[in-house]
Length: 464
Image (spheres, helix red, strand yellow):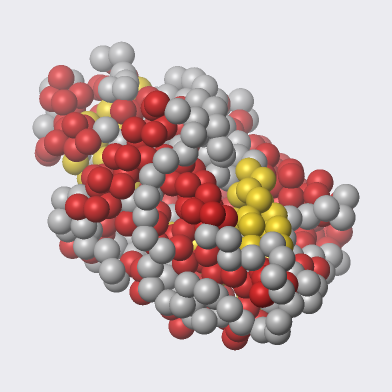
């Protein structure tokens, strides 16, 4: 898989030298035409424009390597003159959530969205905005439903209808900087196995002027995943998370205990001193790769930005466990379906667009994830794609190390709270409240009461 490494190097080179996008990648197997359905739309002799809502930004200092790669693939697709032109309308992070809402309200929604999956789709399903993706699977000659585990498909099933095609697995890692540990007089024997261990080494590291971990919290990132890791260690924790979607019950014994642990960690200097400034994905990750934090918790969408020369300086370990946890963190680590591709029902039902939507959706569900997987930018939930990647050959940097560690230790994923909030407002409220816990501005009890009150309000609105 040396091609994958060369591909990413080209992408990074292009990123540094120009805002123009330049890289290469293979489209993968299957029928590249994606032709299905009647004779209208993409096969009518005219070019049909398909608008794509994505997070793949096209320029600016924060453009990511995967965005460079995916936009290049879109350029290649459009250059083939196949009767379909994809117009990328990027909006990064939570701004994408806002754009989707505003576009739907203005009756100007994009034809295809590279969005999040799970409960965030509820609002749009209720408004009849999204198309049934099983209908797409039935017509596509390139992407098949059986390529995905049923539990991944189920993530986007609402009221018995499948509204999404899974795109990326969220794969987490917890690791230590061996050099910082050594400077602090800590050895491999001191790698924290429990919360008590974590608090002990955090004090030693912070006394040396480093942040103990990079786990800040801005908009609930990356804190909400960390919180979930401490709920699912408890008996009934997984069920408490999954039941939230219909019960609207957040104040459970498992959630309350984990919240108390989070508040204790904040008081024990486990988190950076400025949790907001060092929150969100890039700032928290930068804190670690700049050598300012002793431990790091992050996810695979940051891995392409991990310096190769740092690989020998880190050691991957399980997330430190609750002292009295019921389920060992040596068997699991946070990670589940992170995002999904969805279609606008109006576009799918439009005979002038139908075939073009299939071609564009095939491209988004096959060519893009193949290129991303080969470049080490994503872990695809599509079994045909993932099984074609050899993560053990040294060509995938941090992602390769993490995937090997997970396989060698038989690590499984777990669901998280974010994906099991009943709507986007609950997600945002829950995550912003974590910011306050991390900053020490409210207690665990206040956080639990505040979040449950919001859940009760949303339950009443939904008539649940």
